[in-house]
Length: 615
Image (cartoon, rainbow, N blue to C red; front, side):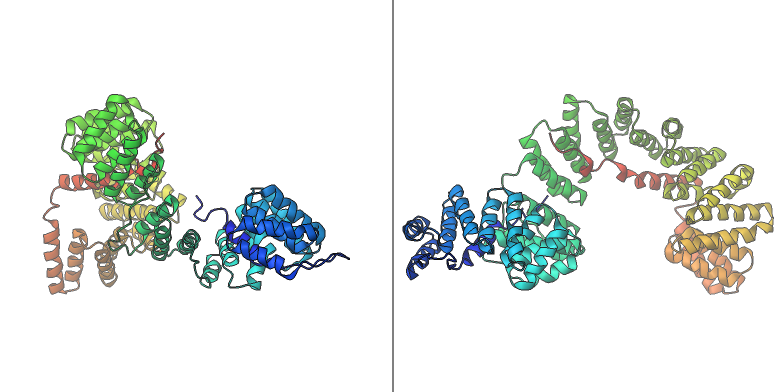
């Protein structure tokens, strides 16, 4: 998508025309043109009376057929009258008459550029530069052509020379800034544009502001980009490309503050409406997205992609009834797994759990190779505490998608809820082995009771150690192994593991100082070793990072008591009491872990921008 067009071609021609002085004949014996003939014709051309100018020129040419200025002016006039063949012939004659001058080459090049003969135009500008290496018009012309052909680095070299000759010239500056932007030199590009003022021509001014906005966007200044795209759009209300850029930068700006966007251009195509809908939806503006998807469907009533994305936008906006009705209509025309899966997720939102399960199953049946659909079906069972069906779905999921960590986490959570702790530990470690950075696997593993670690120690210790050795730069991997070593050492009353556990936990915190679980575990280890001052500092950091951790408050209270700081201990116990009221039962903890797990993956639904455009 190019907001700036191929080039600002009319400016090239105007510059050349305005700079077309009367050249003196260099041929021996050539009679000089009467003083007022050229001036009169040129004045008529400037007034837009090209046909009258041509009559004056042809009359004068009958007396002086080889006058270079007159032939050059005839080329300009016939070009204005769209008599391109005559214009080309005139400019080529100028070149024959003045082969060492840039004028004929430049005007021929400008004409060829207008005719779409870009390679010939470039060659003609190059010829001008051979004879006049610092000719401004030729430098701008060749630079413009090279930019249009996306040879921006080469273009920048020519345009920089032109800019140094006339640093205030609009076209030279615009094209130079554009080439700099395209070669990832936005600071220099911005510096050039700041020396220019936009012209009165609204179309050209729109391109100026669009380029200024594009440079600001490249510099990461979305607020300025949004402001300048808005200026460009005010001057070019039918430009979809500028409007799209305005929407993108406005939605992405940090200081939106309720900024209202102007109306979109009229008469948008289905594809353009779809593109805007996807952009609004990806930024959470579902109301605007809905209207554009609706417009897409009005233009293409059978568009599958527009139907799907409109239903998804309805769901994200909480308009569940409309989403459900639209999906059911679509399923009447075409049964697909993703439609059933989306319908099921809508039904889940409205409490229609039986229908949701049924439609999740249909999605799995229609597309058994899609990992997302297995996960969604298993998660539906999980969130409604039907654990045995969940285990079965995730068991199949782990076989079919053996590299999906979340399938193992889901199965482990269901097993954990049914107190199948050994199986749950095995599933969680499998997830960690696949992805030690998985927040789901980490959360689930950390929720395992200490007695599980003791009972399963001989099985899990080698696996945890292998993970830590395989991923020495992963804080979660080191934490899991260090915490397991520490807890096993406490329960088994073997203090020799404390040194290893402390080293692992301290290294984990070096890698990730914002890991609250590691601060809590290390603080507990310090307290176990009677390093109470170290323990207090670590407990306080754990609480700072996770103020709702009842365990941290409780253990900090115990440490304060050991230090005979009873008032502080009492305060921490009070906080613990308030926080722990909703966490007294193991089942409540299990439900919390399950809810966090399922909610964390609700964003894994297909997004609007991932869908194909309407066809």
